[in-house]
Length: 160
Image (tube, rainbow, N blue to C red; front, side):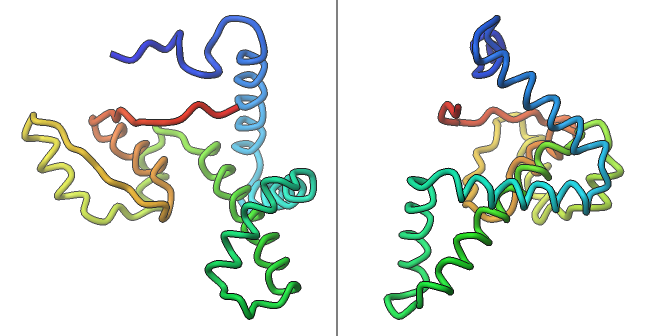
């Protein structure tokens, strides 16, 4: 059983509670805005983070340089770094806008490939282990699984 009182951002008082309240406020704002506006703001926020976080920016640039190859010119690498941070901002905006109670929205916006295999395995009563790569949004898959009656437990590292 998961102990909500020990989850990051769920502590009483202190910075964890402030982070939780800040996240809930931003998520509420993002839900209230039309999706294109929320996405645009989130992309801009991602680029702002890139400008204000040189250590993170350097890690992303090093990783992208490995993928793009040694011949990549600095201007192309810079565009890719900015695009990566912008994409990450939009990803988090989509995650913040999720609403597990709106199953019709989930069905309209996303396709779960292999859903029948998951549902069959989950119905066996033995549990299911999902190995998910960093492709797409596994958070959306988790919301979908919970919306069809199969809550998830996940391994995660604490994030500030």
